[in-house]
Amino acid sequence: MNTFTVYDRRLATVENLTGRIVFQDPRDIAEHLNIFELFERQGLFGDEARNMLSQWAEEYRS
Image 1 (cartoon, rainbow, N blue to C red):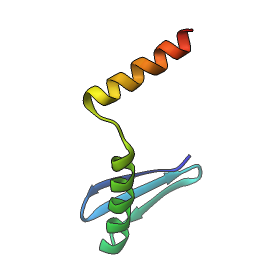
Image 2 (tube, rainbow, N blue to C red):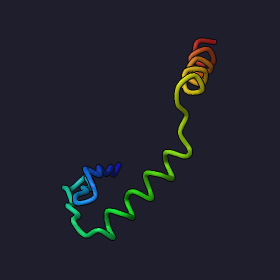
Image 3 (cartoon, rainbow, N blue to C red):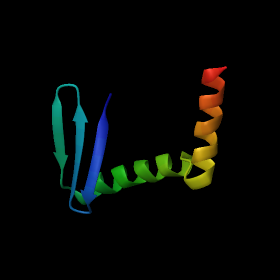
């Protein structure tokens, strides 16, 4: 599984099974910010997230 971290508009890292890649080019960082925004739009937050977790827990228990 690969993960990435955007620290600020000057530094991002990507971690994979064999190591870490450091990005300092603004274009690379902007691309990772775009990817994060895509994930964020798919996410659930607050009551919506709690409700979904409760639903999954109920389904798991039954």
